[in-house]
Length: 374
Image 1 (cartoon, rainbow, N blue to C red):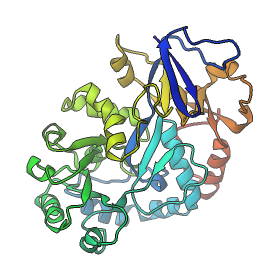
Image 2 (image 1 turned 90 degrees about the vertical axis):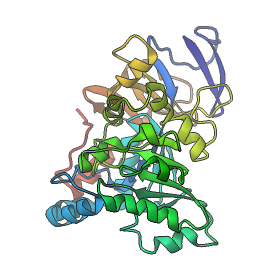
Image 3 (image 1 turned 180 degrees about the vertical axis):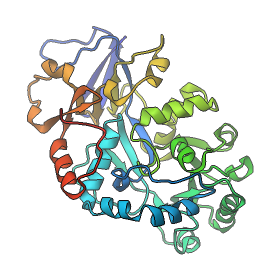
């Protein structure tokens, strides 16, 4: 049981429960709740989260998948891409926020993000993949590039060609740039030693390839982080994906949590946001776990509707309607928040999410949102 005092965007003090309450201070009181650092999603395509999952069979590699959906699902892709880019980006941010993610690493072209509710990390250099990134050998070896860290889809397949793509990257990384591989399904431990880290996306891997990366052997050679990928290939619900990773039994539960907190904070150079400790950045989540007898079991039982409070840089970004009576605080502007329902649980989120959903629906009437307004 702990009290957490936040001031000026940082965790000022941790103390035994009930010991920090001071007259005149603003506070929320929770019963049988768990607190954890705001999660870090190391791989998403923010502008692709209004797509349904698109795939028509199990593929040998991402090249087969890309060709197939461009032929079979061409009309559906066109309908989603008619939605203006700023609206798609905004929804991608909300998808992450609703899952308790306070930092997301966007992969792809540099996006203009207006008034971000969470941290959108775009400081690394994104290369798509050996097959789809033109002149990637030149780009990774360009001597005057500012970023020395690259993120690239590698080994996204189960065939020999997917493994050979990894070997090609190792061979052509002449200046030994820090390369963070994404997916790595075809990667072996010898190849892993040449990379800074791997972003593991098990839900996306199984949807496309019916196989995922052997992270229990790769983690001896490199850091492993978790990524959701976009809804083009994975569920919007991070917590379903996390339970999928847990079910693999390749990584201990506490290490899985670290793959969403401490490890990516270190790898991406994000400072201390992956911890709950005095002096650290106040990115944190409070949730009401339902199952299990200890905190880690309760953590893995969560779903978006169980999140009670999401704080980013010391600012409340989302809170459960059950806390509304406690939110009557001096200076707290409830008008900045909108009300939505997540699996029957009412939440208040910063910004006009209902208005965003309405605007998106004007361009794409068939859109299926995972949240509702009633």
